Amino acid sequence: MTPFDPLLEEVSSRFGLTPRSNWDQEVDQAARILAARFDCEPLDLVARAEEDPRIIDVLVGHLTVGESYFFRHGQHFEALERHLEAWSLEPGDRPFRVLSLGCATGEEAYSVAITARKTLGARQAGRVEILGCDLSNASVEKADHAAYADWSFRGVDPALRESHFEAEGETWRLNEDVRSLATFSVSSIRDFTARLPSGSVDAVFFRNVAIYLTAETTRAIYAEIARVQRDAGLLFVAPADPRPAEALARVDGEGHGVYRKDESVETYPDHALGLPMERVGDRPAPDFEAEAARPVQIRETAPVIVRPEPAPPGEELLSKLQLHGDRGETREALRIADELIEASPSCPSGHLLRARLRIAAGEEAESLPDLRKVAFLDPGHCVGRYWYVVALAHSGQEAKADRQLGVLEEQLRELPENEPLEDGEVTAGELLRAVEELAGSRR
Ligand SMILES: C[S@@+](CC[C@H](N)C(=O)[O-])C[C@H]1O[C@@H](n2cnc3c(N)ncnc32)[C@H](O)[C@@H]1O
Image 1 (cartoon, rainbow, N blue to C red):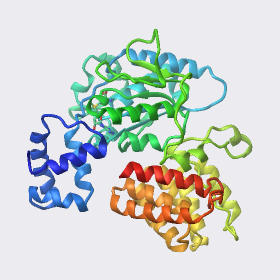
Image 2: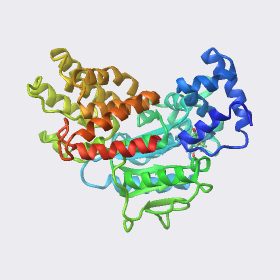
Image 3: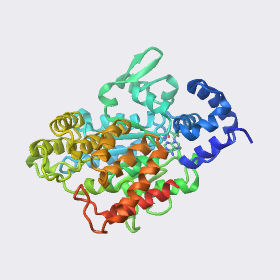
Image 4: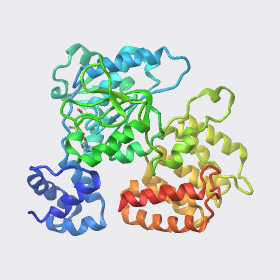
């Protein structure tokens, strides 16, 4: 027993981590660092954590093991290479999407990027999109910067380092052309995958992470992986990881720990958090001639929901905004959203669109002022309130997220089941079910 047990229990239950024997020792050390940062006594952290979710978020980074290195379990990258070659021969220009779940400091994601660059050349590799997530803020910052000490290159051919990295002090920094293929988020795996549309991912690296998780969390993550994978998509797990059970079948002849979706098993319905984004993501891309064939993308490109307003503020601007949003050209889309809001400051749609773009770019906290504005301008705007809940939860404002979720649940219960909501995509009944599931998972 230590006075920090409530913090450890919170970390374990919130993120599905199995408590480890060294946590008592680690938490003492982390508490000293946290106390200095939050300007309080270490023992005050327990009470403060109830008010300030950042404390648990920082603590979890101290308690997880962020060990990684380049081309770990090398056979997986050989299998990936074959998969990339097959994709490069497919007609069309859909992107090849890879996830690094529990990416730590980024070596895994960048090994994928280097493999893509080597296998496909610069032009085609530009269509490979690698998304990494990790609970640890410090690890994700390092991943973003992409500078590594020798230890991260153990077992790697020095020629490979020479060709893709530049010396930076005592470290080696990955060149921009490869670095730019990967983006990273501070997020739990479950929150991260929940935002991805079904059937949108070509390869998932979920290695050396499940060993730290409870069986229940691991099962839920495998279920999510099966949902987001394309039919022929691959999953890579490490030798010490628990094997995926249902819906993912071992692939013979690709080496150890390679799985793919088992098509004979029914997979997963919409995830609560993913519902509205996923519905929109699954619909055909808008019909803008050359753009019509472009696949709809996730996160950066999360398509924007346009609410039909009685007096639409600049149809042309809205169409342009949607086009840029769907293409993932977030900066340009944001510029147009600013224009739209300036022209019609009291139109909730403009604020919601700008917020959705920010959420899609991983800037949940920055989306909050717009979402508050939507709630102020139109308190009955259910889709707006839904995104407010999502952004609050992702910004760590759990208590507020729960309050807003309660309000939304009540509002939705008042509406007829088949009432179409503001985005014209989701009905009140559908959103209510998603909200109930979400509320259940947060209890
Ligand atoms: C040992 S590292 C593995 C890194 C990399 N996948 C590899 O195999 O080299 C485990 C990482 O998983 C992260 N992690 C653990 N549980 C997580 C969760 N629920 N969501 C996101 N990241 C998690 C930890 O923070 C840590 O950085």
